[in-house]
Length: 161
Image (cartoon, rainbow, N blue to C red; front, side, top):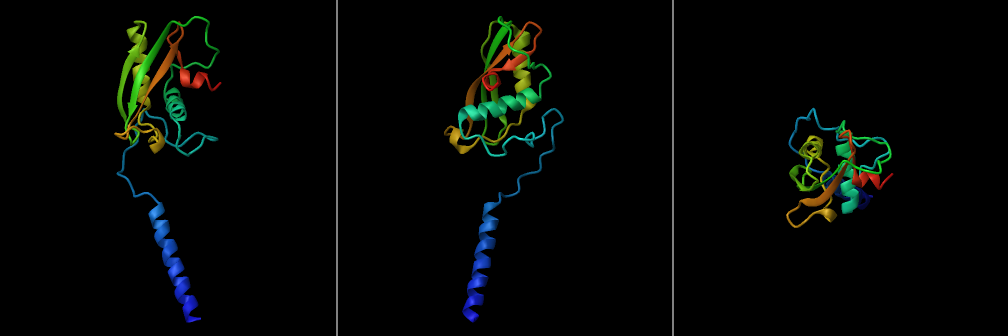
């Protein structure tokens, strides 16, 4: 009987230590940004991190689209006014480290719409270890497809429809 109590006590102690190790340490309190969308995923969306670069790009694109009033859901027109390709780098914590225009056809106003849409949507979910580079960041290209009225779709989301 005495041995059973010792084993039971040891089991509870081990379980308590494992439970304490599995929860992340509390992070610094960060005030919410008025322009960023809520960090909770929409209903039906996964709370698990995206484990592939394509899945992470899609998660970032969804966040940008939610934070942008300039998007449209109609089918893409046969002829686009502009295609803007952005080079995006996000650090290990999900903060936007860098965003630059990689390719454009010269419409500076639309380049700025794309750049500001990404900036406004930050911060992003922290990238999973499986998509990070050696410095902990993730880097990818994202394409913004603009129609004549200046509204856009994001290429990573067009393929998902």
